[in-house]
Amino acid sequence: MKEDMNVDEGSSILIINGAGGLGSFAIQLAKQLGLTVIATASRQDTIDWCKNLGADHVINHREALAPQLEELGYANGVRYVFHCFEVGLELGDLMKNVVGPCGKMAVIQYAKEGAYATIDGTDSWFNRKTLIHSFMFARSLHNVGIEKQGQLLNAVSEMIDAGNIKHTLSKTLTFDEAKELMLLQESGKSIGKLAMTV
Image (cartoon, rainbow, N blue to C red; front, top):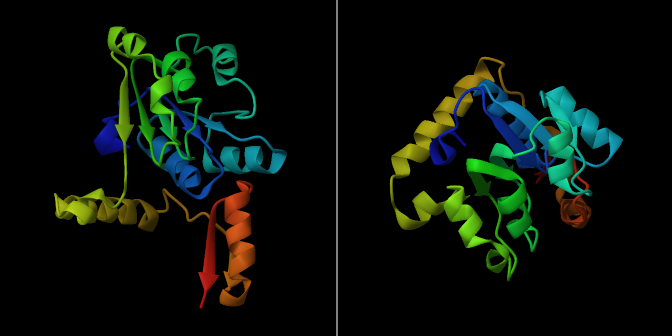
């Protein structure tokens, strides 16, 4: 978030899938970076989870996002979008109607086939919008700037040790329950991080 998006303190960020494992961490990190956090969630338990982690606002990702952002005072979109779920054909709408002028969107998981074709290149160009791909293991996979990964992990460790970021483990299952864990993960309804003991 800090490195790839170069976020400015005091700006707004929309975290899509705020109650998921990555989104739960991203909410806390964004607050530490001084951002106004708008998270998406759709059930009362996930809304409460996001608010407890520090989200300033929570909107429903099962409804159109732009009108909800407008109600919060973001008629021109937000400065940053951190997309923590696989992105599909809604990518073009997000880039055009949710990412504000000079804004950036980071796609953390892969995009479904056809997603990139939905982007309005003219709108992105005229409004200087940036789409960022953030794959955690790209450095180690390609042996490029590996030391940066360690630096980032050390910075996060310091925040955790200081109590500024808390773990988001919500459920631990045994190896014998691996199928249940995978089904829960694939359902899109898990909250926080899931763990398996072996």
